[in-house]
Image 1 (tube, one colour):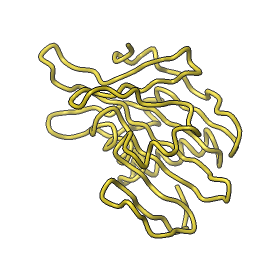
Image 2: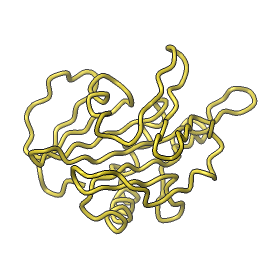
Image 3: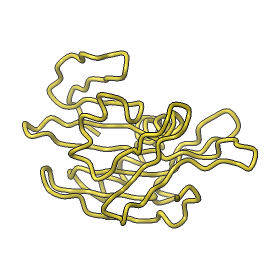
Image 4: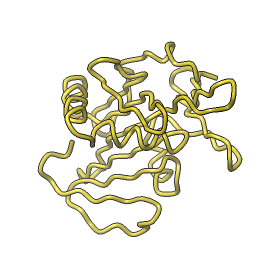
Length: 183
């Protein structure tokens, strides 16, 4: 998604990432580095005590609150994968990957970074938002011991918002009614 430009990865283990001329990836949901960007985002993760999931809240959609889905036996079925592309004031691109739980973060990363389906998902998002900043929310499903990867060409996103850099986010796609984890 950053073309041929250099990219730096930052996670909780990398508190001082090396400079990059293009973008940075931050993963693991609402960690300290991720929270630095929340004032620029049209959503937040509602903090809960350790051991509980932190639901996703979208204030501009009447405070829509969504979290993971569980079986009757308290087994995780699916989480929310949240992938965000932001352009900072000086033109640096930042990519944020999040989820209510680790499954969502993994789903966000795999959505664009894994093999052929990743490139198809990039093409889908590029067709929808072009070069604009965006927030993509989709399901990350657990099938057996693996995380199933989103196929945006087959199943449209739960939510897609976009904006011109520095502008306000607007809703492009809202399929949140299909999600069982609405609270």
